[in-house]
Image (cartoon, rainbow, N blue to C red):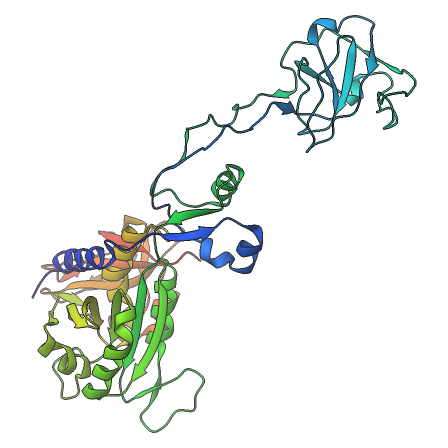
Length: 421
């Protein structure tokens, strides 16, 4: 049998190779597109460095509603003639000596002005009518107390980002603020790491769709739902399918749908029984099957499958729900998370056992547990691979390594965090 670490390294390499060389995806930075398909921006990583095509802000502008002035003209008892208003979005005429131009927040600073005095600091503390400063309008004045330093309440061009500066680097997460920055820089779209395309296939004659009535000896397919949620959490685009214990039907399904995928994930049919549909269909085509020294989740399958003129990566998990999900947590989720940058890496650490535990000496046991208020780990459920309710309650996976058959209360163990509550 291979070890947990050996199998994890194999799956990591398999996933990395499957996703290498895919062309970046172009995401539109348009509010209409984002509002319509906001989920496309979630958990995305930039495919390359992005530089600023021009400075931000692109022109020097006012930080406040107020009056643009020449700082040298503002002193005790200064009275300046009111010039024409400068609203945001319009070009500003040059500021004549001895005048003050009403400017709105974000409006360009008139040529000749080097400071802004907030509206509440002038007398009267309001703007004159819009006609003030227009050709032919009566002259009006505003008292501007001083002194005022040059640059006061002025946003200089390039004070946020210089032209040619790196706005974001390859691998950076496309956060809302970063998306806004790229849009401010005039980018209509941005190249991001493409999401893995995963075909998820549940196998077994005993499976019924969730919500469907159960026939004799049937169970509802928990693996399909659980793995689809796990895969989506690390940025995968998931297509699902379900087949019975029929190798011919499974082969036909893979021939028609796997060519569109980067990765095929199957559940069930990987052990040494009489109806191991996945093994029967894929082992003759070069996919490897064998045991990993772990409990639960010992039987595993991995490799590549030639379909549609290309090689598609294949990862095969056992059918028991806990075996399937623990395998995905141990092998597939971390590989996809590293490859895409989507989702957060699981927390790894140590904790003291709140109770003793026995383990098969030849297996790396992954028990389910929760951390108590003292930071100790308490086991939930037994080692059985069907105890899905215990896994749903668990917040950590508890590692009991190969070669250890018993641990006492208080012994330190490695724990991996699961979904946060």
